[in-house]
Length: 393
Figure 1 (cartoon, helix red, strand yellow):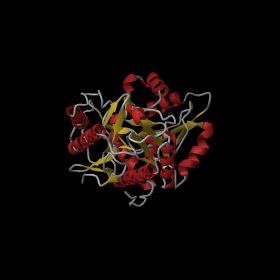
Figure 2 (figure 1 turned 90 degrees about the vertical axis):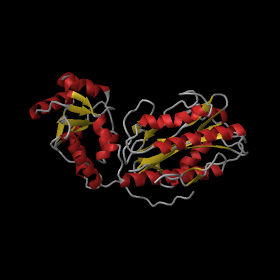
Figure 3 (figure 1 turned 60 degrees about the vertical axis):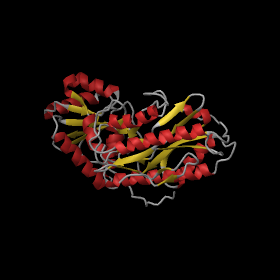
Figure 4 (figure 1 turned 180 degrees about the vertical axis):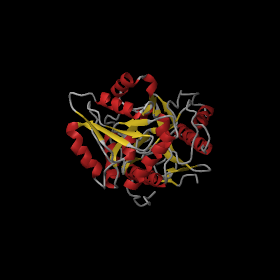
C-alpha cells in the first residue's frame, strides 16, 4: 500500500472549546455538580496544557453551570496563568485557586465546594488514590462518583477530524510495516526490526512510536519480549507497532511467514485468525453489545478446533483508540455497552500455541451509521505484511 491521505492537521482551540461545552452539557444533564480532572488524557482532550504529575495537586474543576476553577501550587500560579493565556496552546481560562506548601489543596477545594453548594463530584476513574482518599475524607463517600460514564460519553464517539487523524496514523504505520518487513533477511534480529519500523514511522511524522517484534515461538506470548533473536526462514514474524499523529494513536499488528511458503498448519492458523477478524467485523453495527463482537470472533477460533474460550485466543478482541492507545470501549466477553457511531477500536483476534507460534492480526475499525470500516486497509495474506483495501462503508 502507499500512504495516500494528507495530514488532517492538529485539533484546534475552537474544537477543544466545543468539547468543553459538551462536557458542561453532559454535567448539566446529570445529577453531578462538577468534575475534577488531573493532568492526563481527559484533560489533554480539553486543552493543550501539559503538566507533570507529582505529589502537588494541579487540577481543573468544571462545574455544571459552565464555570471553571484551576487548582495549583501558589508558586506555579504565574506559570499556569501564562500557559492558559497562550492563544495557540492554552486551555480554558478560569480563576486559579492557589495553595501554599503548608496548606491542604483538598481542604481549600472542599471549602470552595461548600461555598457553591457542590454536593456531587465526579473524578476521573484513573485519578490517583490519594486524590480520591482526601476528597472522600472531606466530602464524604456519598459525594464522590466515578466520571467513567461522563467521559465515555464525551470521548468515545470520534468526530470526522479525529477519525481522519486515526486513519492517517494507521496508514503511516501500515506503510512503514511494509517497508520495514520488505528489508528483512535471514539473521535480522527482532530488536533491529522494531527499531527500523519505529524509525520509518517517525520519518513519516508519527511521534511516541513503539514496536514489538517477535519471531517464531516467541510470538506465542501475546506481549512477549524481544531479546535479539535472529530470524530464520519459515517461521512467523509478529510485528505490533504504532505511534501518534497530533496526539492520535495508531495500533497495528501483522503476522506472516518469512522466507518460505506457509506450511499447511501455518496457513490454516492464519486463515482462522483472519476468519475470526472478519466475523467480528461483520457483526459490528450500532447497538450491538461489545461482548457479542468478542464472541463472534471467539466462536470462529473454537469452531476451527483451536480451543474454546481463552485457550488459544487468550485476550480480549479489542480496545478503543484515540488520544490514548487503550481507551473506551472495551471489546471483551463481559462488556455490555453497545457500539455507537463514531467509536473507533482495534479488532485483533489471535491464536497462541506455546512452544510453536503465535498469530495476531490487528486493525483499527470505525463504526458508522450502518456498519464498520477498516482504517487504512487490512492484511492480504500470510505470505507478507502487505495491506490491501479493507471491507466496510
